[in-house]
Image 1 (cartoon, rainbow, N blue to C red):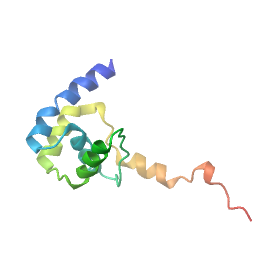
Image 2: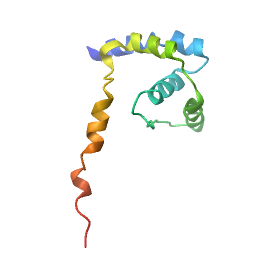
Image 3: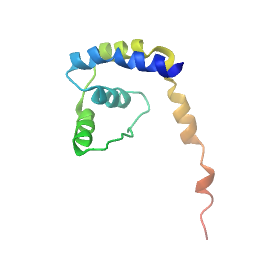
Image 4: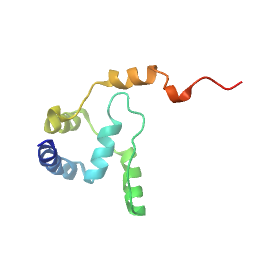
Amino acid sequence: MLGDVLLERVQRLRPIADEAGVSMAQLAVAWTLHRPGVSGTIIGASRPEQVRENAEAAEVRLDDALIERIDAVLGDLVDRDPTKTARMMAVEPAWMGSPVD
């Protein structure tokens, strides 16, 4: 089941986060922000300290070697095709419609 595989791989990221000196949440946000075509990330938080922790992730710099290690752990569970985002942005959503005169 994908859920079990994903959880196992996420746990394999813990030593990488520890080595980088960041929490798992910060590693996830920082990695997401380092993806081509990503200008922002949506985070969830239920406590103020989680908001602060996630915001601090914007300052985390991951070098290429660390990103490659994260990518190796995640493998094919992550779709890395930035053209999908570009294609989505090139299509005007139906909800935008025509301006009302």
